[in-house]
Amino acid sequence: MHADIDQLSLPELIDRLDDLEGRRTPVGWRPEDAVLRARIERRIMQLVCAQFDGADRRQTLRVPCDLDVKLRSRDRSIRTHARDLGVGGVFLDAPPDDFAVGTAVEIEVRGAGTDEHGLRVRGAVAWVSADPDRRGVGVAFANDDSERHERRLRRFLIELLRHRVDAP
Image (cartoon, rainbow, N blue to C red; front, side):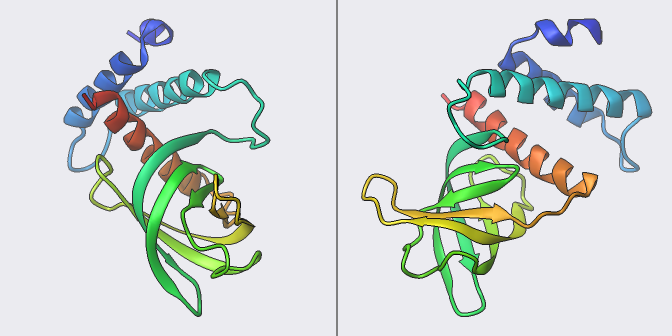
């Protein structure tokens, strides 16, 4: 069963992940299911990363999206849209004049196909762009090296991918 993971397509991997979700007990995962889930998630990320040519300067995958976002700083709170999201950060359609580089922010993301909890992370504005073709702000997530934090971001991204694969 484990050997064939590398041979499955993205939609098939998503189906396997859905099957595993159905086997989760109220107390958590059986050890063999937890191992299988981690292996499937890694394979999904490998497949998605392989679709990129490496021209992007980022070291982590960004998934194009259109998600409702609440962006908050100490001085301001706005609703906007995320245009791409990755483990390291997010690009937002936020007015570039409203958030200076270095501004500490909190982002709450919710969108179709994501779990009911959404995603809430802290970060800082890394860059701003007034370019009409890519107007907005780039936010780098706060450097939280914990495995739990990275796993939460990875699972959120996989939920986004799952929704995109299942979409008609």
